[in-house]
Image 1 (cartoon, rainbow, N blue to C red):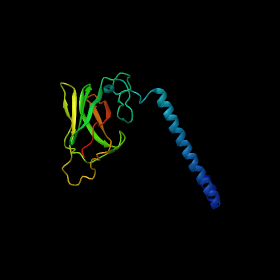
Image 2: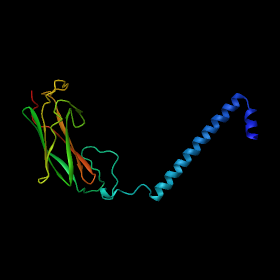
Image 3: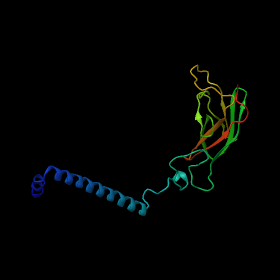
Image 4: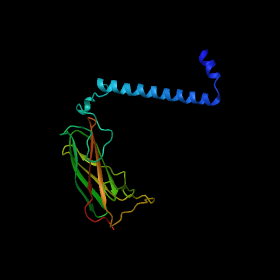
Amino acid sequence: MHVVDWYLGLHLGQKIVVGVALAIALFLATLATYLASLLILSSSGVGQEAAPHQGGKLAPASLRPGASASASSAPNFTLQVESARWEGERAMVEGRWRGELSSVHCDLLEGSKAGRAIDWWDRSVAAEESFSERIFSQEFVRAEDTDVKDHIDPKGDYWVVCWAQFSEGSATGDEAPIGGPPPA
C-alpha cells in the first residue's frame, strides 16, 4: 500500500507526469518484447518454410502482370498474350501458357497497361481455353446493357491484361496493347 499512498499524496500535475511515464514505459516494454520476438523467430527460421506446392519458394505478397508467384529463375508455368487486336466491333486476344492451368481471365483497359477498366464489354463472355493445345482466347464484345457509361473512343489506346491461375497455386499475368483502330 505504500505505492498507493505515495501516489495519492501527489499533486494533480505530478499524477499526470507519473501516468504518462508509466504509459511510455509500458509502450517501450511492449515494443522491446515484440522486437525480441521478431529477432528470435527470424534467426530460428520459424515461418520461413515454403509451402510444398510452390516448389520450395515463398510467394510474393502481390502480383503484377509479368510477375510470377515463384521466385525460381525458370518457373514451370508461363502465360503469354500473343495477339491482341480490334476486329470490327470486338477486340480479340489470343495467347498460350505452359504449366497445369486452372483458369485464365482477361480485362480490357483504356489508356495504357496501367489504365482504367471500362464497362463497355460484356463480362459474361469468358476466356476460352484449349487444354490440349495450351492456348486461350478472349473476345471482348459490346455489352447490350443500356447503362454502359464507358464507350469506345475511336482515337483511344486500349490494352488487355490477362491473368492465369495454375493448379499448384502459382499465378502469373501478361499484358499487351490492342492493335488496330477501335470501332467508331
